[in-house]
Length: 236
Image (tube, rainbow, N blue to C red; front, side, top):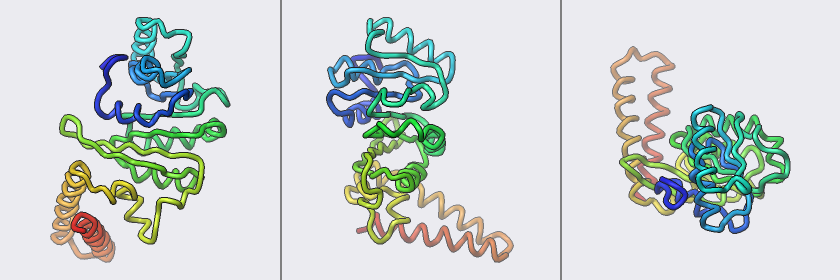
């Protein structure tokens, strides 16, 4: 990857950055995403945030190599601490677990007042992000799921709005699977959730062999219900 070409998952993130945006890329690593966005003429300013020294230096080197120092500010700090209020309108966070992304958003809530768009790419636990967005006044406006190098990734786009808008009666299943992804059910979606179902079935089998305490029976029933709900989505 470089400022001219991104990975498939980061290119998907880049596609949702609107023209003329000011972006903070949190966990920017080599600053490839903001460099690409500026090279494409999509953004006017970016912050590349990194908490670790090695990736921070890699980001600095990338920005210097491209002579983008005037438009991409590389900053070392934890999560949204690298942003001043009002500096950016878009935040991208990619390549982390969903729980860590939620932790970053929660810790930096005070910095989100002027932000109009979040573009989040969790490697796992996208449902935790959907739950956080819904609980904090952010409307999920789009989702994509894709496969790259044998791994499945989800990209979530949110804007300040009506947090209940994308959800209908079966909110628990929609928060888990993604209300937009459930409608499309592409090949990556099918692969991810069929794999999950197989894992859950193995867990149920283990519960069946365990001593049948009330807790074991309850957990087994929860997984059986989960399997049934997801299988229904995949089959319709």
